[in-house]
Image (cartoon, rainbow over all chains, first blue to last red; front, side, top):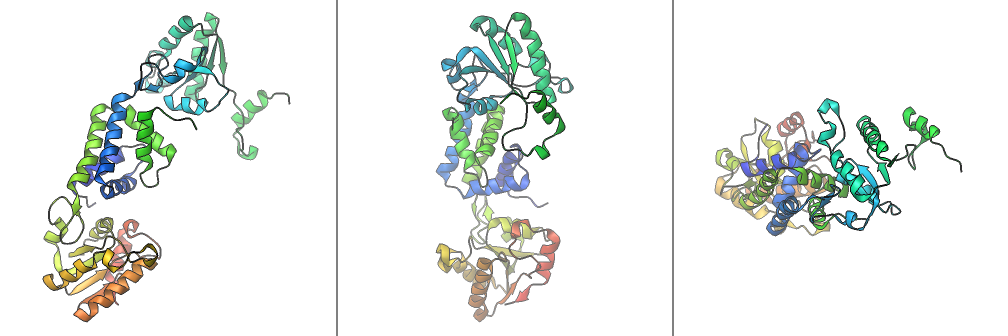
Length: 197
Length: 197
């Protein structure tokens, strides 16, 4: 395969490292950059370095922040903690306007096959918060996958002896889906967890 | 819609400007950057600025190069010129190993609706090359779209009085496709079957 000149090849290689970006998409992005104004390209590069330099984890919950403690921890109800796997999950849950509690980011899920054990994710930090902040409910909002379920059950078992109420977000059919195409496990859950209307 | 903290929001905005990238994809890219090593992020930003700084148009053909004259112009047969709309088309055509001529990038196609007239694309430069380099054949390899066809015919009519053989790549390339993405076999056929216009 013929290659581009070195500076373009380097840029294509950089873009190729982004998740889900193959060579053709990377080339498209690279051409866009080369055809952009120099000031815009510098601003783009600057935004990248700046985000990397200023963004770190919140000391309390592990969410992304550019301060010591993130805004959610500052304003949220510390007695209710919603546990998620990654910071991006927080944004989705924050949109649910009636949730006023705080969050806790595990930065991963238990996964023995990938050697992710309880000490590799932020479980110790969660246990510390339980006693310090007087948490009375922990909502496990990890993905409904094998790893997410296992992590929810593991943490649930750790917390229950401490007298904390541990709940799991409900599983069922999501809004707008076709029951015809919903998988059996989800339908079984949806039937089990049915509620009176 | 809830927003991220400012540095992340800025980075998401930067990525959103890339072609075909919506907010969700931009967020995914931004998270990737924040989770990357600082050295890698700096290298990425550097590759962007460097490509923008060093890459410019070849003085002769208008292809992207980091030198004064691009490699294709240096080694190619100057008497045969293949005319394309954009630099990215050159890489696709270069893969056709039996083409030994040079290229000429128009940087656009005639498009009256978008106010792209003959003086907006590199037609004058092409005419200069005809006399200076003793060009005996010009192959029009613009996209087989309305604009590409119109540009090919326009340039053909300009060049024929000068005694230059003007050919058009055969309609082996299917109507409406992008030369950038056509497979090599089709491109080879299209070059072989070029016809006089």
